[in-house]
Length: 284
Image 1 (tube, rainbow, N blue to C red):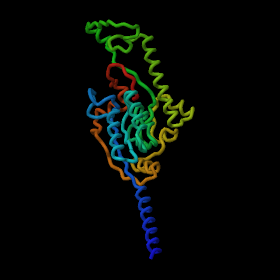
Image 2: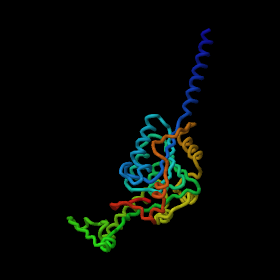
Image 3: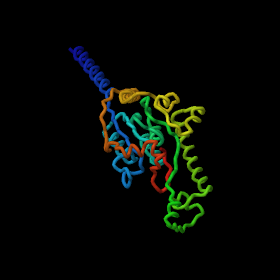
Image 4: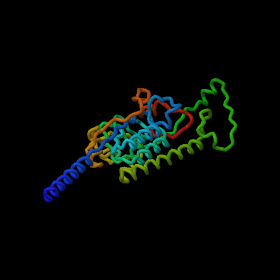
């Protein structure tokens, strides 16, 4: 009788262990949509109905940790935005205690590419517009229009270069050089982040430093993305990294991308001069 009890106990323990092992292979993943222009904050913006902010990402990441998700797929559709905001979003992704996959959709370029460097893996469609690893610092300058209409700009300031980037006076060559120097330094930092996070060789580094845009298929060839595909490939990557069979759920507190956001975030914005004063360095 004792032997029967012992055998039944062993069988029960084995079954319990197997059940626990089976359950431990299950997990859950979150899908987070990040669409629109990158913004420093959601308030006071021309495109406040959409866009990506560090606060948005932080809020969603807090939900991920609180609700115990094992992995996150960030589905990105953005042409970039301010440098600092892009770097802050990258840090928010890096600090998340879960596997992170960035999935590129139509456009994931410049500042959007920068913050994707915080992800464990990057997946892009073969036709995704990505790359654009460069910096632009621009503003509208009205001095000739003011002169035509007899408008005088009176400035009282201390510091020789305090007025660098003013909209109301034509910049001298010296002031342009100052702005170019700052832009070049930010560009160097951007390139260094790409080299460190993507292990791009020196030869490839020289190619990407021009700020050129790539198709996803081209980005895969030079190591800017890991895999080509869509959501299912991104899910597969998340499961490979976690070693779990994941059930995914969409998390969102943002409105869908509207046409104004898309135009502002796409590369066309550079040619249309859709920039806001004062002068800021942007990755788009």
